[in-house]
Image 1 (cartoon, rainbow, N blue to C red):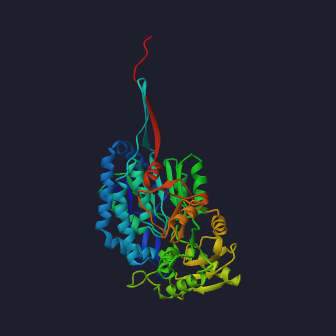
Image 2 (cartoon, rainbow, N blue to C red):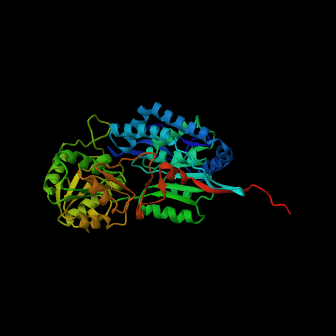
Image 3 (cartoon, one colour):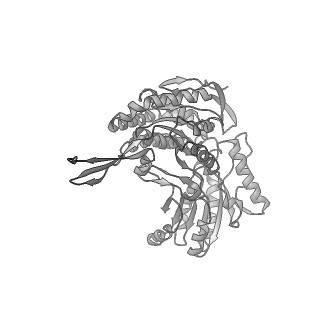
Length: 475
């Protein structure tokens, strides 16, 4: 039986949707709740509420704005238990991972509130003073994805509000519930209209990107959809931030301790069932240790528990939705049709849920779709290399450029290799380490603009230079 419907937050009030849509638990393929399906008129209501709230919110001292954002973090932390269970049910990830996401969202609010908008003095002479400050844009439309629905929404909410904008948040239709609950928490913290959450189906995103009352779109999702967002937003020159797909590569050098590094390499690729934009999606292993690493990864994979994230001991949950499940299966079927060898996995798990086992493909050709396409699921190609120059060329032979990692005991060599990689973030002997204080950006078709750090905060503001002539000339 489905749970009671959830509510949107518009103008500081809980609002039912004009319609309803099912929310499916990917562990069993069954609908367990109803979410609001907003009409175009309800989106207009949310945008109007945000526009009306903007003048006063933008003039609220930034320290007060920060304090309220920090209070949101406190409220999320106080509700960690119910939020993590709800997140597991709608997203599929194990409870421990859901706890990390909800707790991380709370911490991101509090840490993000420590960032400062810079004020720059361009000139301070006897004749004039020129200062550049950064002022808010207006109404931000934030479109969040289904893989980390809460924390990736928070990545947008925190800088938008601190910079003085108001916001309309749209969660993915696959995972709307946790974000709707965060919207309810925000109602008692922010002035009405500052923080709005609307949910809906496939029409709601295009309505937002083309809405004349929205001044900026911040979108996280696929590159294909990001291109449509950019095209729609261009019609009235909306500002945009796009955090898009990746095909991140790991380079594993021959001097690593194989036994020590195998678990880290495994989770770099398969955490959250591979549904992470910066997951390792291509792993290049030096020929001298390739067989050892391949055997180690396959053995480790056989010990990892896959199942319903709500069950104790489960380490990997299902693929989040049927569309993505089918896409990953097609990629696996293509590898079979090419007669590629699987070190482990390769067949879906028989279940009503969207379960795919950890699948590792043994040294496929560089032009195989399993190498060139982003799986966004538990499928990893393992590739041999001999020469550093050659592997750098192969790693860079992609239109994506989100992240990459190098695994070696020679940190100076890692630095030199990292500087040659065309991607926004390079990790050495780790991966997926992200912080509110460091910019995160994609190169190429992995993104447009910056999230996090002061650079990410500035994405939600526009520079205003004030030039003051100190003395009027006497006629």
